[in-house]
Image (cartoon, rainbow over all chains, first blue to last red; front, side, top):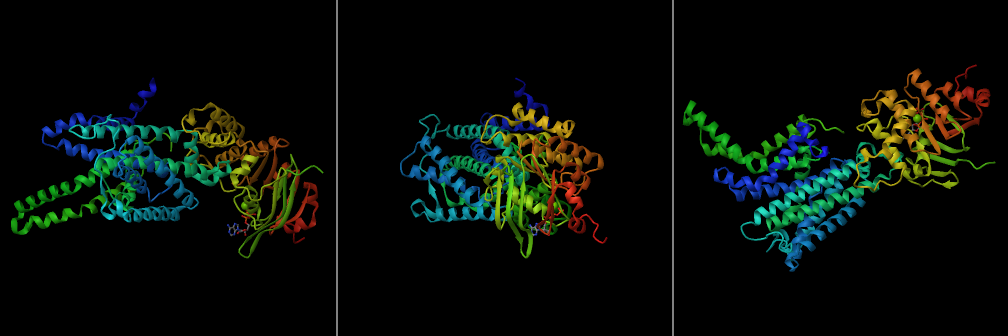
Length: 358
Length: 250
Ligand SMILES: Nc1ncnc2c1ncn2[C@@H]1O[C@H](COP(=O)(O)OP(=O)(O)OP(=O)(O)O)[C@@H](O)[C@H]1O
Ligand SMILES: [Mg+2]
């Protein structure tokens, strides 16, 4: 079939396939990185599992934001619903993943239906504010859940049990869970790909382009938008269920509005309305978040050493004072984001060439 | 008398103190090309917006093919067979011309809750869409993104999309607006070819086109129907000539 090799014909496709292969093979080359003293395998898997899970969440947001033009500023609320479903069920002794995951997905979809029904009649800033308000409402509900740790959250004793199919303890736990998350990411990407190119997806993308015209063509646009909104909520709930398993911990912080903002940043950074954009966005955002402070500290140390060599210790001043600047790494991150938004309108994905359709 | 295709009864629309539609009553017969003329700001577009469900009238009633549609949402009216085009070009700018018309065809075929098969590879959407583009003379521009089409081509696409809904009645809001003479002539030919097959309410400033196409003409001034009649009657109407056809001072 030519369909299998088609992505390899463009740079954009090659980069996408390359990234997915890199992610798929991580468990096999990470021991090598560990041995070389670059990064411990455990740490690499932990960071990248988080990246993969948030890539799922960002992909779900991309469905409504990138393809549907709905700037939901409360998308992390579904991460919270998914996470709390797993945490609360485990707390009450219901540990089966075959119960927890479907329920997490279902509850997230239902909540998205409710929020969508109340917010999708509005546009622009109003829509952003209403989705944010609902997310804050649920955040405070979680804060009020005294039985489940309130503000402090709840440590989950054990991971979801998939009838022993996936090791949930022991040395293989991290590799197994990373691979599980990665497979879920692939399935979600496949699903989003089918969705956005189907009749449903064309209708959804049409509403982003020109909602009034779509109505004039006979599309009851609200129905398509709310169904997309619910699907996105469901997929994000799935990411939440994975995240709770990954951290073995749930807390209201999972659905704080800043987490919703992070998801928007990942989508915009990676490239709105491109299939792989959210994956690039999640990788770039989380790796910057993880390693930017250390990288800044390293650069500052070099600068300090250079200045000391040239002008002497007195002129260079105290290294600790220099390193304090690295604490403001978020300013550097913010600067990078603004540059991407201003100069790379298609996000990271846009750097690798234009997409075929819009 | 045969039942009217479209029946407008005492329609009122106010914008603050301005009465844009002032107790307007009007009937369009099946198969008729009914032109709506009037000076700028007469309320023509406002009327089209109410007929197509984009504006709610403050009072009055709209009936289409015997059914009260006054409170029906826009999309539902299209499914009943009442389609519109826009005075200010309103196409899906980041879709190709073919995609634009294929979406019209997709809407015509029923609901779009089909989540799996790629729509752009579906001949049941692409073939009729290509035919519709051929009909308006855009066949060789099918794969051009709508935003990159010339103004005249976008106007043609605008009409192709309304046509692709296969409506019983078309509400055309100045289809020739901003077109060059050649494109205009082509559009007149296209609309002439639709005569008898589709009922039309045609808003147009180009009097040559109006007199060439219309079976009847209604003159709208300040939201009110000043006169309705055949082209000959309208031409002969003193009031109309004074108010609109620019022979006022004589
Ligand atoms: N949304 C609105 N809010 C307030 N006033 C409006 C609105 N839409 C139209 N109007 C006013 O209603 C009147 C009728 O406008 P309309 O666009 O229907 O005129 P028209 O006959 O289509 O004119 P033209 O020939 O210039 O297209 C105008 O005075 C216009 O300013
Ligand atoms: Mg007008």
